[in-house]
Image (cartoon, rainbow, N blue to C red; front, side, top):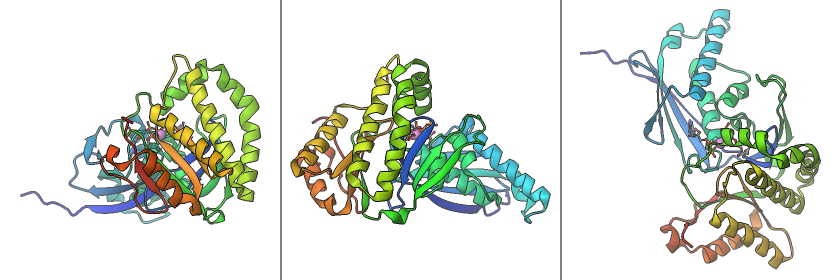
Length: 343
Ligand code: ADP
Ligand code: DP6
Ligand code: CO
């Protein structure tokens, strides 16, 4: 009988982060730590494991994926370096052990809700715990996914990517800590949990090559908006924050349309949500809600705590629970509302 060594396991969680200014080289984003919209990753190491393996949401995935491989390789390289430097008495055996990774997202994967951000941030952080690596991990997370480096910091962050490919000259600056604006809430309306047809990275590459609107946006729009957004966050000016967020989301999707061939991330439910938000704000003669859409049809709604119950009722009214299999709101501060396609 084989001797099965008990595996060492480490479990961590990471939140998603949603960019409110979305340009492929500069972002301002919000990472709100909460009970929902998160990834939970467990990494086990054992002498008896024959190979590295990964399960995502219960299904085994291909470990040879280049993004996964570069994260694994980098963490092991740093671990080897540390153990050679004698910095930490890392069990050198562990370095040669294979890992089994088990990761679960409590929200739809690859549907424009930044699963790649939470997923790779969590993976890199958990691997680092397992192999005793400390320090700057966001660069490694970035090799998994562009947006993953951002889930390593909390609160409101400005991220300016440098020119160098290795990202050594990129700059993350916290605009405000999480505690700065405790009334701010995020609600997610799931219009479709399906996987997106075009991945974020390949979509953005085509946009850079083909969209003149993107060039205009980068040169003439984004820089001013970054400044205004930082001020809005610092002043906790929800109306200004909301207007900038919505305009930037709309322009991002306009550049997707301007990409050739065009990329459609929004669907008819997304458009209904956009209309609903504008009608709602007009009704109250006050900007109470903002939407933003990443590379997918699902809406992320920002609002203030005092408006959450009313807005949830409105959503229930316009998108009744019967049409979405009864799945509806899950506790505060994140509300995850499932919308059905056939409305
Ligand atoms: P999203 O809009 O959800 O970020 P992307 O296309 O950017 O969609 O990324 C989706 C990919 O990210 C998945 O196909 C998978 O490779 C990776 N991913 C998502 N969640 C995880 C996770 N928990 N652990 C590891 N990789 C993940
Ligand atoms: C439009 O970080 O998901 O959502 O590197 O392919 O994983 P990959 O790209 P990803 O890009 C997200 C782009 C965006 C806006 C944003 O959040 O930056
Ligand atoms: Co992504």
